[in-house]
Length: 114
Length: 116
Image (cartoon, rainbow over all chains, first blue to last red; front, side, top):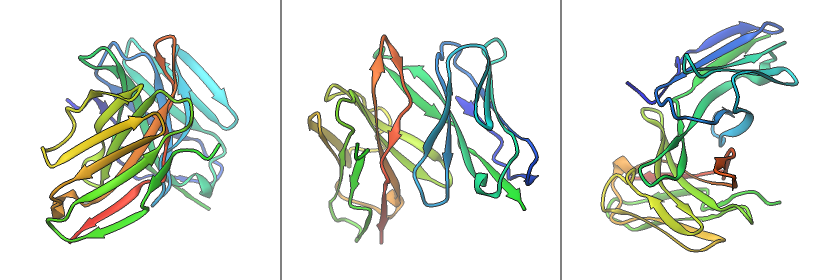
């Protein structure tokens, strides 16, 4: 089982619709959860983070966390063509040394059509 | 804030040559990470440092890879000798931790390495 799993997509949605991106993780000890956006040929860019169960909203983005189900999601409302990118889910994991690191999923490609 | 600075942006080298990638983290950040990204494997963590000390290098694929962080503002990733399968985009990222919580990383713009 992969540590962080995402559907590779592509997820295609029309402009103005809600895009829903999902992620599951295997380590129950994970404490912090992040969503990164990566445009083709660019570096990942942090767009949301969440630490507690429930929802966290920031503009058109809502992150949802359910630790019992080991599930994280990202909702993008009023999707725009400029949202077309790969979205990476990342979770913290405490290594054998006791220090934390981020483990990334392979990403979901989102395509928003005009 | 200039962000995380990586150099070079692109590197093309011949198999067997030594390659050195450089990274300057954000001032004040206490974590530094080196990742490799390929289409097949996504983002793979190679090694990370906390306060300039290597913490976990279990992701370094082979002895041909080495990394150093001589001070808080500079790190290098070296591949010697390079092989075509090392071709990838190499990212450096830095982060600030607080009360045991790791905040999100800031990534550099990456180095696209091509080994021919």
